[in-house]
Image: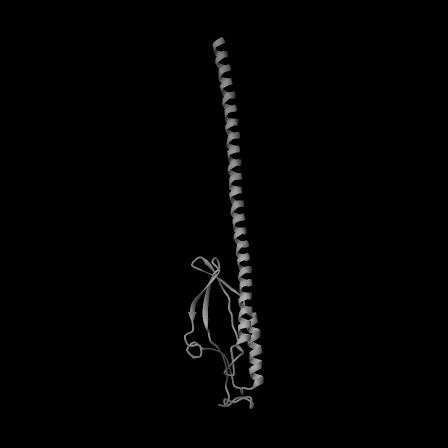
Length: 189
């Protein structure tokens, strides 16, 4: 294959991919984790998802540049909030660069990173719950205000009806007195 840039050729192909290892569900109320799915063959290409292909030679510099690039991307990942079956679901991603140039990284560093990620997830979950509670309180306050307004309107309507009834009784009494006076006047004549 011929490329416009003479420095590029298809002799070398540098491949970056993602392999999901597991999916964990966390019950926030019970504070317990459940393993929902685990990759049965993490070293297989079965679940391997390509992220990037480069026609370049694999060197220490390319590997480190790629690692730096994806570490920055991993840091930018944010908590995903969605609703499934009328329940709030929060999805936290935990990605780790576990293989570079086919060699596994130091497992102690990986374990430390996992612990940091776990603590960060806990903190983000805590913040998400706070936000959810805040929204729920706002909704409850809104509903309470609606109920108070409804009760106040009902009281005002009741007062207005009482006042109308009072005015109607006064008018009836006035008419009755007029009729009584008119009856006395007719009897006297």
